[in-house]
Each structure stands twice: as structure tokens, then as C-alpha cells.
Length: 323
Length: 282
Image 1 (tube, rainbow over the protein chains, first blue to last red):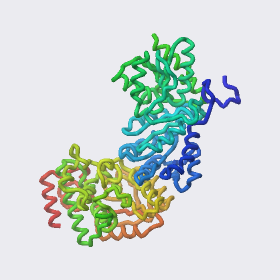
Image 2 (cartoon, one colour):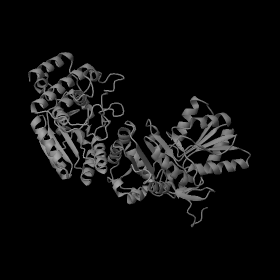
Image 3 (cartoon, chains in turn green, cyan):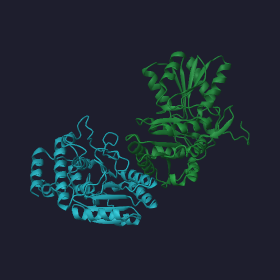
Image 4 (cartoon, chains in turn blue, green):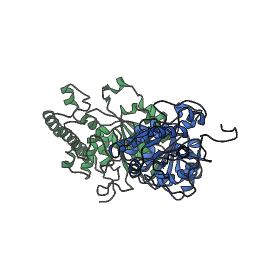
């Protein structure tokens, strides 16, 4: 059990680092000079999404259109059509769910250079409860042709992904979390959109994870190693386009794949990996996710435990592949 | 050709409007589907923007960064835009006759990714003003003296997003943004005041902080005067509440046929012939 002084939002053996939203906010602020075309469009949650750090440094390049996500996304699309790199951020649920048609019409369909950033994703936001939890967002974003969908796992990866997102020509959805995130990567670790990262070698089974679940996947692999089960761990930070080669290799070279994500069962990483592999290298699969249900209020670690998003559940899913 | 606005005199403008109406009827009849009546109501506004000295465009360089922007937010009326840009030298009549056909870039609603001249992909109502606001903010940020014109329908303003954009445009004092509401009195299932009465529109726009004008939008002289007044207002956005007739140009025929809405109905060949003869005599 975590001690009262331990700022540990998630049960993992790894040290805790920056929340991904904080890492994004600092990176955006720092990259403002290098990317002079970047502008920010906020729906009055800039102090939560951390775009306010950029806005304070570059007030002439920041717009707050009020609590109006539909207009926010449309304005971002218009700014992008004027040659701006328009970053627009809100809670993942308000951005993707509320403004989905505006994302379709003003961003995806016309292929505008808009960077959609959804913070407070997943159930690990905790006490605010289900209405604030983006758990359909990855599925919604992946349903849009031509939108790159990125889910980062820690502060370092988020800083690198923020830069990669600004360099990428075209629409991007970047999914971020609220609580502090376990540290996965060393400073300076590289990041490329669409290229997954093999964090652990292994030949028996593969665990494919992203976001907060990467730390738990690594813990699960450690636990399984003690049982003599050798697991490969892949950080599939880009959900669209998938790193198909890494999946083909995993399905060919290991005995099965478990996909872990902080998202509904339907539409997210698990669905996409299963769809791809079923048509290429069918393999036994297991899934660890929120399921087919909404979240609720509670402390983040307690919620993750209750909803089965733990290293132990991932290890169980691998064990059940052995059957 | 260079980036320039085309300025015709009053007779020239009226002749353009007539020509645009002919093309609207021809291409929608050829397509066998589409929205001629919604296109006809907006003809004077679209003709005046393109030939009355307002939109600086270059058909040879349709994506020139210093062009003015026109967004047809009521995207179903796109035949009026294809026709106007055809007259402006963007397209040939032969090209726009492929309206709505497979593999044609002249789709049923504007597709900005596919067709130069389409400034926004529209067809999901209520979204064009937000996109236009983003463009206007981008122009201001870069010190450009261009204008953005957004044409909406009177049914379209049922959408709440329109009013989000109205409020934000006021906040940012976008004097380079002009909205025109084509009040043709009908939406899909009936009269706008019966479906959802959004009136009084001019008072609402004024309350949102906009410089507001109310005109008879099928009167070319009134349209020209309003667009000039909009351009002269630099400190706040302008909304032109443009009262028109759905099917303007062939309204007496529509009355005879017993339908003054004809929403989403192309004219069958015999009626198209009658309409073109009627226009030629007008």
C-alpha cells in the first residue's frame, strides 16, 4: 500500500516522473521560438491542459474562445489553412466527443495541420468521475482517415512526441494523462511517429501497451520472468498508423499477444492490433482495458485496481494465453 | 494573371448573376440531384463578391497566400460557387457539368482538399463561420489586409456553433470578417419561422456586438452597398442579414409548379428548359 507521502497515482515499481500533460505544456512553451508558426487555441481549460504556459510566453499567438469546443476546433482549422500550426487542447472527452464532427469537417477531411491534444484521458484522472474521463477518444480519433494518433507513456516521451507532432505535416491527436506518470525513458530518448519501441526482449509472449499501461507491462514481464516466462514488451505509442512490422514480428516470433490500454475495450489499440493481425498473422490474443463500461469517482490507484488495469491483470492475461 | 479583384458595373453584375443562374440550373439538371433553389437565392451575393470588386483572387494561383477567402458555409448551395468560379476563370463549363459524378472534383458539397477555390470543406451546417474566424485571426496575426466572407443559410443559424463563433469574433474585433445570412425563408422541411424561428436575426447579431446590416439580398444595388459598408467597417465584424427568395430568378415558375421551397430538387429537363427560357427573357 502506498504511503501517505508517496505521490504515486499508479501502482508500479518504477520511479514517478512528470505528468504527460505537464511535459507537453513545458515542451510546447520551450518549442515556441523554434516553431514560430505555432498558435494555440484554448477552450478555457488552458490551466488544466497546460497550454497556458505557452500562452503566457506568447500571448499574441494564443486564443481563448471560451467554453466552446466546436468553435475552438473550427477556429484551429481556419488558422491552419492560413499556414499556422494550430495546437488546440482540451480534456480528451470534450475535444474528441464534443467536437468530433468539427474535427471531421475542419481538420481530418480537409487534411489541415491541426494538432489536437486531449488531456485528462483515461480513468486515472480519479475523483472527477466518468463525465471527465476520455475513454472513447482513441477509438474516435482512429476512426478518422489521415489522423495520426499518439498515446505517450511518460514525460520524456511526451516532450519528444510534442516536437515530432509539430514537425509532422498533417492532423495529429496526442493523448495525455492528468496524474504523474512512471518514468520509462531516459532523457534524450528518441521518438518517431508510427515506430514502436521494443522495451524488453522476449520470445515466449508479447505485451503491447501504451500510455500508463507501459509501466505495468514492464512490471508484468518482470513477474512473469520469475515464473520462467519470457515476455517481449512493446510501447505502441502510435495507434494510427500502427507499426505493422513490429506486430508481424511479435506474432511470428512469440506465442501470443496481450494488448494493454487505458481505454474502452472497443475501438482502441486492442481492436486495431487484433484487426491487423487477424488478416495477416492470426495469433492468440488477450486484452487488458477498461472494458465496456464507464468509470466513476475515486482515487486513481484505486480506480486502476478496481477496473483491472494493473501489472497483475496483464500477467494473468499472459498466463491465460499459455492454456 | 495576378491576384486581383474584378469590378464590373451594375449592368455587368446583373448579367453575371443571370449567367450564374443559367449555370446553376444546367449543372443541377445534368446531375439529376442537388440544390438549385438554395443556390439561386444566394446568386446576387456570390456574384457581387466575385465581380463587384471584393474578392482578390488569382485563378492561375488559386492558393496564393494573399488571396481573400470566401467560405460557402451553406455547402449544399455549391452550384452557385462552381458557377461563379467558372465565370471567374477557375473552371470551364464542361468541367462543372460533371457536378456530382463519380471521380469529379465538383462534389455535392465543397471539398477543399480536392478542389482549389473551395476554402473550406462544408456540408455539415454551422461550421463555416468558425473556420472563417480562424482565417480572419490568422490574417490579423500576419498583418494581412485581406477579408474573409462567410455565407450561411437562415436554417443553418439553428446550429449553436454559429453563435459560439459570433461571440468569439466580437471578442477579437475581427473587422476583416463578414458574415452573410441568406434568409431565403425555408429550410429542409418547411418555412424557417415555422421550423425554428431564430428571428429577429439582425437584433441578435447586433446584440453579439456585430456591425449589422439588413438588406433585400436579390437586389444587386443593395448587396453592393452592404458589402462596401462591411469593408469600410474595420473595428468589428459585419453581418449582412440578406432577405432573399428561395429559387430567386424563377420564383413565378416555382409558384406555378406549386412549390416555393423545392429543397434539394433539381429541375427535370422540361422544367429546366422552361426556366432557362424564362431567365433569358428576364
